[in-house]
Every structure is written in structure tokens, then in C-alpha cells.
Length: 114
Image (cartoon, rainbow, N blue to C red; front, side, top):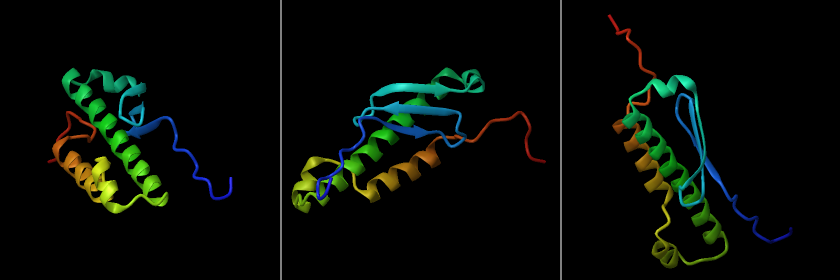
């Protein structure tokens, strides 16, 4: 391919911390595939839905970050990159950290520490 840029993938994915939920999305975060382990289906439906939406957003953020890097490598000026609205590495890291703090993604158990 020489100096040509490799095209970005047409679909992206994100996996829950436990690995029990996997979403495949478009670059914009629209879900096109979903794998949910049976045990996850016992969760509160609203919590499961929130986890799926969170993973779709994470997938879109990472796709946007890759697109931003591709445009920067192609020589787009930083001022123009800022106008695209594509996330920066710092923004993605900050959002992912906030999500980890906001959502309880640890496996739940009836056991409690003594």
C-alpha cells in the first residue's frame, strides 16, 4: 500500500470488564451485534440496558479517537481537528474513568465481606 492510509474498520467493539457483554457497533456507536452471557440476563433490565449503552458509547469514543488520529496523520491542522468534534485521548480517558466510577460493573454476589 505504500504511503496510503489503511482504512479504518467498518465496525468497532467494546467488552464489559467481566467479559460477559460484548457489543459491536458502527463508528457512530450504533449497535450491530451483541453477545450477552446468560448470567447477565438475570440483572435488573435497566442496569443491563445502561451497561449496553455505555459500551456502545465507549466503542464510538474509541472509533472517534482512531478517526482523529487518521486525520492528524493525513495532515489536518489541529484547529480543523478541533472543529470535527472528534474526541481527544484525554477526553476518552476522562470519560472512561468517570464511567468506571459511576457504574458498578463488578460481578454481584449475595456474599458480603466480613
